[in-house]
Length: 308
Image 1 (cartoon, rainbow, N blue to C red):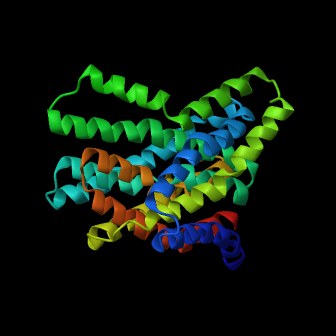
Image 2: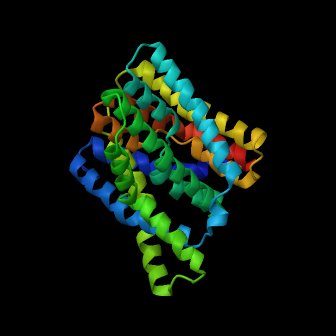
Image 3: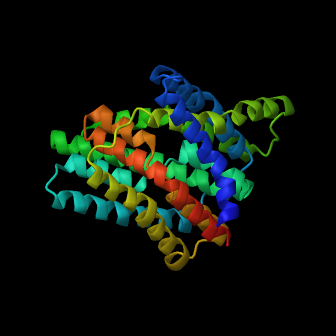
């Protein structure tokens, strides 16, 4: 495990550097917000387009992969939601907690780190996980909260979901990349170099932004946050591993990437949703802080197990 830790440590050190910069106010929250926008709209999008343009849809989409991931996520989602409802919290809070249990930081942490550590062949599976998280589960949480509050669904909700997806730069960049890949044309050298230079900023920029954003988070509601961190870092990858390796017999390398992606800490976009709807943002914030800190050990352990 030590050799793997030495490989993962630089990634988490970048998060730690961002956290330190945020805590001592060298890097204020306003700067973090702008850095996050740069990474989200430009650097990460360039990286995702470049990866997707070198893939075929057939390489990306595997029904067994999709079923394994969705079924495992569904089980953990149900467990987390049931645990919340047993505490007699409202349905929308239960849904947010369930979201914490299954949505990892795949975009900002998973894509840059896994492609470097597991090789270029990890790009397809990790992009599939990212797409399923954004399309399926981001839509699901919106539908649950809307139905809980309004008691019904309307066409305007589905219209808003559709517009949200086509305005998401990660979805758009992956989609355009796949469309380009189906043409069979090579990306022109100057364009490829431009995307390579811009995409190279995604890894340090995203990791630093994660750390800086954590500096402003508080660790309230510790009991629930620890449970949600356990669900995300332990239950989720275990469920995915069982579904992928035992039930659906997913190809081993792709299954390994899926399992590592499932072991990532709670994603920052869960907090954005919680803050937007005004549903338990402090609980989500604490879960992100705790799961990110603990993931230094747990993600390393999962990668070591997969590599072994």
